[in-house]
Amino acid sequence: MQPIVTRRTLIAGEAEGPVLFSDTGLSFWGGVDPLTGVVIDHHHPLFGRSISDTMLAIPSGRGSCTGSCVMLELILNGVAPKALILEQREDILPLGVIIAQEMFGLSLPVVQIDPEHFAALGHVTFAKLEDGYLSYSGDEKSHKEAIKIALPQVTASQVKLTLQDQVLLRGEGGQASQLAMAIVVRMAGLYEAKELVDVTKGHIDGCIYIGPGGLSFAEQLADRGAQVAIPTTLNAISIDRRNWRHQGIDPALGDPAERLANAYLRMGCQPSYTCAPYLLDSAPTFGEQIVWAESNAVVYANSVIGARTMKYPDYLDICVALTGRAPLTGCHLEEGRRPQLVIDVERFTQCDDQFYPLLGYHIGLLAPAQIPFITGLDHLHPTQDDLKAFGAAFATTSAAPMVHIDSITPEAGLHQELQKTLPHKHVTSADLRASWHSLNSAAANPVDLIAIGNPHASCKELETIASLCRVSTQKFVTDVVITCGRGEYDKAVAAGHVAPIEARGGRFVTDTCWCMLTEPVIPPSAKVIMTNSGKYAHYAPGLVGRDMRFGSLADCIHVACGVAVSSAPPAWLGA
Image (cartoon, rainbow, N blue to C red; front, side, top):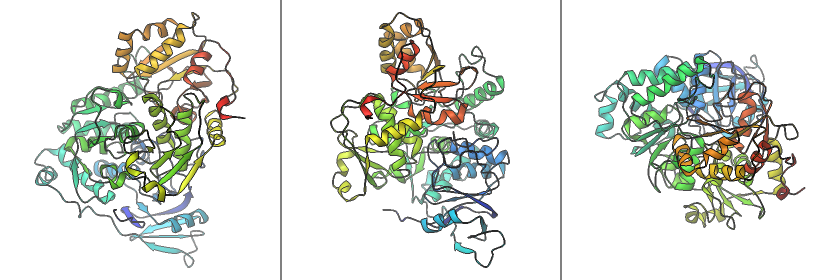
């Protein structure tokens, strides 16, 4: 096992100011407004607080790989924290600071401290970083009572580079490859990786438009002649490229979002535009070393397919794709894939498809940064879509890059003996009811819009919706919008699944996903949105300011058809 370093300076710098503390990880994407620095995650203890000009102390990030993009925009907008103080290893947020340094000449210090001193920050008001030390005290004037700890600087000097790595680092492969390799090597130092590994496939999440910083990053790379070294797909972008003008999207979003997509196409990326790349024909195979960003895709690739990828932050994904080289650490290694705790799930037998997102959401809360080994599901037969929904919800509340599910995921059998020595936590029906209530901020209110496809809907899900539509000849009385990738949409058209949905009034949006959609696709008059996605039910209140109702796919379509559906938790969860 690699040594666990608990006190270190990840990015050097000096700062001082008021401490803003939380013992809950924070997803910057969907959790922090990049224009204001205010926490918008309604489920987070810091909701409504501003992180700007604070010494922000959080255990780690969580959720989306796009947190690095938000960090960059916060810095460029002048509303970032003065410093970031972490308790656990964090791969996403520091990368946003590194990009700000490398390309824009701006920065802020980032440090990691041990659990004892991190917990102490919850009881102080002032902290200071200076000369490689962190000091903290009750207030700015309490110098005599201040606690002071040393934080050694992380370097990349221990990373072993091949001759080709060194060629790229010297700039002999061009400016873009030189910058990309410099960032890869620097991040390898943060990861404490000893060497780099070849990767064979990439999936880019940085193609989502968050602000001008990310656009400038991509266009600068493309202008310097960047070309991917491996087959690389693109995540869902911020617009439906073929239809955004007809949908009434503001050009202030549509134009830069299109420019951003074009920059990645200029670098040789494939226009897949999906947040479910595991549905593509180019999906990786068991044991394949890849570089994937997009949190739900990472969890699915590692857990269900058995491919090997870190939870790559946006921007590092393209740097690895340009060089074909990744830090050899984390889930790229056998030891980085081992479970760290066991989650024993109460035996459920009559559950519907709400079960998997609810379970993933709750287990993410129990394992905020640990890889869990999950028992109690061996009698179930989850589908690809069930595991997709589970992984997306898990990745919303956890920073961990994968799970093992006993008798279901391909590597679970390797850890049968190890799991006997690990700590155990338990999931009951009462726990899942609590998660259901957390995701239902408007359970009893009328529904104005049905949102399906987060992550992107599969052809099989569209077949299910079409079957539900054929039961009734009635037009939808509530607007239904489904997001999906172009590939799955084309398959569904050929199979005859799209026509019956559109005949009822359902609409399809490709290329983008619900986490990027805003008005007018979401009508201004729509106050309550219903979804079958645990991920979207969590993020939407902060992203689009709507109340959410969460339910099964069948419930969503029944509501769309005007059929009354109970606003109480499902019967299989008990009273």
